Amino acid sequence: MNERERQDELQDRLVDALLLAAAGQQRAEVETGIGQVLQRIEAGLDDSPMTVLLPEVATAEVSGLPPRFPGRVSRLIPWSIAATVVLALTLSYQGCSPDRIARAAVTQSLVAAAQPVPRHYRVTVNRRDAAGRTSESANDLYVLGNDQAVLRHPLAGRRAGFDLWLGKSADSAWIVPPFGPVFRGDGPALGKWLEASTEVDTPYLHVTTVLDRMKRGYRLQELPSDTAHHAPVTDENPVCRRVIGHRRWLAQQNLPSTIELWTDLKTGMARRIELRWPPESDQRGRERVIVEWVGEEPLAEDWFEAAGHYSGSRLVLDLSDRRAMTRDFVDDIPVADRENNESESGD
Amino acid sequence: MDARQVFEILVREHADMLWAYLRAGVRDANAVDDLFQETLLTAWRRLADFDRLRPFGPWLRGIAGRLVLAHYRQQARQAEAISPAALEWLESRFAQLQRLDGDTFAEKLAALRACVDALPASFHAPVHLKYFEALGLEETGRTLGLALETVKKRLFRARAKLADCLERKLLALRSSA
Image 1: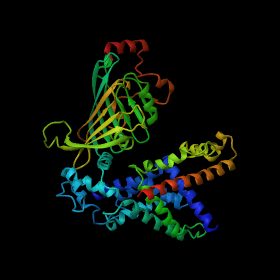
Image 2: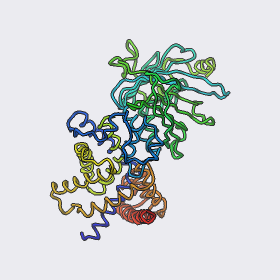
Image 3: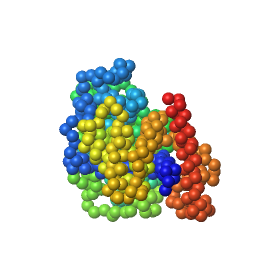
Image 4: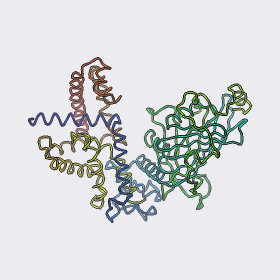
């Protein structure tokens, strides 16, 4: 192979690699690679240098920005987010733009959300029906690390007072209705079941999923720092970093039009996430979903398994079973009764 | 935030670019995965050497480039080896790509997607199916009613056209800079 042919081949490989990256075909390999490397680092198989990469970032309460940062930038950005500024400046040599700071904040929050700590969130869903009436439901979301989540959804109508439990891990998903069989399957099957359900109006969320979508599909903008509950600052209600994301026009249209995030200044943990749909949207009448951090609490060992949410023996059905997909809950209520039930409940 | 978290953020920001760089520099796809991880681990071990006033991406690619050369030395496959000059050429292209608009590497590749959109239909179709629909070569051929060899040739010629198109866009960027 002569020099010209080598150059042509290299150019061909470059374009091939760029096309694969443009199409996102490398994502799985990249994520796997990053995951494995981080696991090795966490396990201490690769000792880090004693010197911290960015000493300013290691402690959030920095005394000031390094002197080389442009004065304009340091005037614009509150000291409370100086750590993120340092980070954002490191991320790019194109200069420091507010959207990069916002992006770094969301990434930091994503990292915090992926930590294997059991966290409890309250999920409040505001809906609007065809007549313009609004309703609200309060759910509980429990998450553990990157891929385990359990949602408690209180039922309405004749099943008021009972809960539906939904759970999902990396490779499986389950639904535990108050009565009848338990469903098992995978994530996509759970998603389809939820789409078919007329009784569950809560979007199935994992904090990491929301943050990941926010990072990838939204134009991010930093907002002035505030507490998550718009209330005076206390230990329980600290000042948070705020970022709002506006859905990019290429993103799926059924996603929220905006996602607003409040993150803990020190840890990056998401304290509040607010998702809004535009008024003209008919996404099951959802207008707003608020995810609020409640606390970090010890949970039963089997909390993230279906068995942790029912007693006695129950029939377990495959979620991908077509018959199961056509039923809301398998408590053998005829469809006609169910429709009556829905009209009684005012949903 | 500790060093590991900062490192993860930096890595996630540059991972797609790093993967594309390695994929362009190394023929063997399995070796790309190994070199990708080795680059990140080396970067972690040598974090103290990183000059934080300089951009992270080129530093990461510098490590990757040295590992690529070492990879070929170990493999004793000199016929396939990439030269330091070729790696330098690749680095120059990635440095220019990094200056394009966009937060993520995928966004920076909007210029390339524009070139794809401008391809004549006979070239656009196989590129779209192979890369953006992730079809194999044979499936692409079946879908388009083309022989396997024809698909390969069209893809090769399409990539040559895309290289020209991208080069023109990068040249315009250099001129404006």
